[in-house]
Length: 449
Image 1 (cartoon, helix red, strand yellow):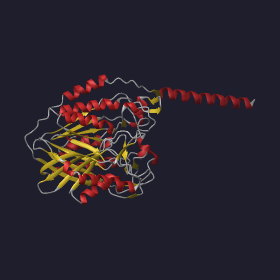
Image 2 (cartoon, rainbow, N blue to C red):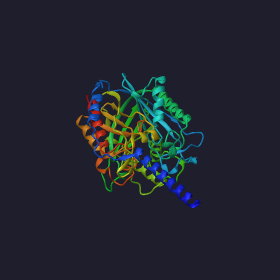
Image 3 (cartoon, rainbow, N blue to C red):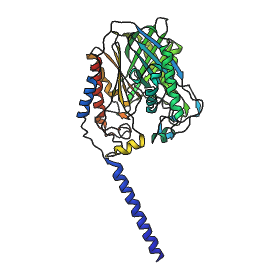
Image 4 (spheres, rainbow, N blue to C red):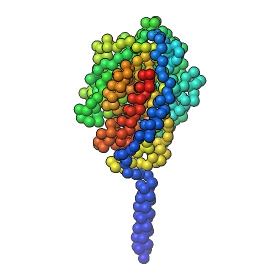
C-alpha cells in the first residue's frame, strides 16, 4: 500500500514537473520568423531622416580641435567584460591602463565631441546617465559621437539583468565613474581647442579575416582622421574592423588589447595624441598567426607599419561642413534563437536583458561621414556604404558600439550558418543587417545635401 502511494506521488510530481516545463516553454519560446516584413519600419525611418536639417557646406576651411584623455582604470579589481565563459571573474592585474579619449571639433558655428572608451562597448546605462548629465558641460548626446575599442579584457559591472551573469553584477558607482570621466575628457578637450587642418583617408591593411565564412569578403581599410593643430601638435583617430580579441578568455589581465598598443606606438613616434574606435567588426577577426600577446604585437605592428608607409594617401577634408544627427532606430521584435528554429519570445528577452532606446548616429566633418551603430555591425556591409558615399562625393567611416547594443548584425544570407554571430547573437532576425544598411544609406544621402 505504501509503495503504491509512493509510486502515485512520483507520477503526480513528474506530471506536474512536465506540465510546468510545457507551460514555461509555451510562454517563453516561439518559432523563428524568417520572413519579417520591415517595409513599414523603413518608411517610418525614411520619414524621420527626411526631417533632418540639411548640412550647409560652410566656407570655413579652418576647424578648431581640442583633445583630452581620462584614465578609467579602476582602483579596485572589477569583473571583466568580453567573454561570457568568464562568468564575471575579476581581473587579476593591470597589464595596461584604460582610458576615455576625446576629440572636440568646431567649425566656428557648431561643435561636436568624438569619444572613444577603452571598453567592450559604451554601456547603455552610461549612455542613459550621459543623456541627463552632458548638458551640465554644454553638450548633449546630439553632438556627442560615442564609440569603444571593443577590448574583451576591459572592465565589467555595468549591466543589469541576465548580462550581469556574464560581466559581473551591476555596480552603479562604476556607471557614474565612467560617465564622469567621459564628461571630464569632453570638458578638457573643449578648453584647449586650436585652429587646425584635418586630413582623412583609407589605407588597406591586410590584417583582418572573415570569421563567419571561410575566405569570405572583408573590409581591410584602416580609416583615418588626422589633425594638424597650429601649435604643431598632431592628433589622429584610427578605425579598423578586426575584433580586439587577441587575448583569450583565460587571460584575466586588464588590457586594451591591440588597439592600446597601436595607440601607444603612435604616441611614442609621430603623434601627440592618438585614439582608436572599433569599426564594423562583425564577421571580422584579426589575422595574426598567434594568439595572446604575440597577436597584440603583430596586429599593432602590422597596422602601424602600413599606416606609416601609406600616410601620403591622406588628403585634406573638402568643405567646412560640421553636423551630427542621432536618429532613433526602429526595430522589429527581438527573436533571440535558443535553437535553430526556435527563439525567445520578445517579452522574455526584454525582461531578462532590459529595454533601452537604440539610435543610429551620423557625423559629417567636411566630406567625411562617420556612421555609428549600436551593435557588432558586419564589415561586409561597408562596401555598399562606401559606394553610396563615394557617389555623393563623401567618404564613410562606420563604427560600432555607439551607446546601445542589439547584438550582431550580419548579412541575411548567413542567418542559418552554424556560428554564434548568426545563432546566439543575432537578436533581431533575418534581414536586419540589410534594413539597417538601407537606413544608413539614407543618412549618407541626408548628410550630402
